[in-house]
Length: 268
View 1 (cartoon, one colour):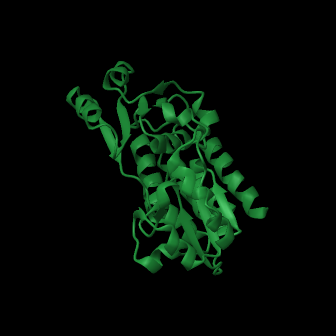
View 2 (cartoon, rainbow, N blue to C red):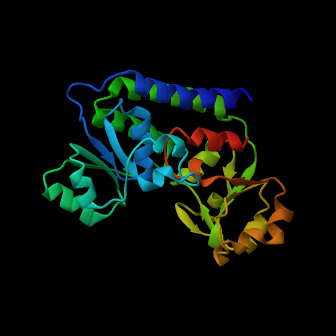
């Protein structure tokens, strides 16, 4: 419970810090974010009126931990025409954003900064610092970073909680070099993906997972509909080998932001 309170305070206080100060004189005044992950960092760090649009995914509560806050911003769908008409002086995109959109905006003379996905704790720390620099909000970024580090100390575990497996639709797992793997390790678990030499994201046959017998199984939240790719998550063998199954909400796991603290806490 104590960790939960501290994590909630981290997120709430970060938003208050962002809303309390004006942007630096040299910072951009009309910022558009067109990526779900950059949306979150921008909303946490931007000063009032500085951020003028976020991606449409930012309002999806299944994907975005800041869906309620995102409702206060106009959304964009990543199209060059609509973003250009917003007259931004800075556009922030993700690494896997539409190449043609980024290229067109740059040809039109608009500054576009591309941020790679953060797949580790250190990468998250670097992204916070970089976003603060892009917005001219270095003090706010330093404050958020300090609160993130404090949250890691409160939510993370130094004890060995045993072996755990990440298992998603189509029998996919995540090993080292992934955000999900970093979350698992931060919660004190040893990822069985390492036993099979898996790094990054790869398929793990159900038979190998059953024979590995992890103490904890972490699966993704199911989406509406009847996707056959998710049928493997209902296999009775999974319940038999790991009764302590954690069905996580994707929104806290999707992006490398301070909200991973909630994902870490959910595994304790």
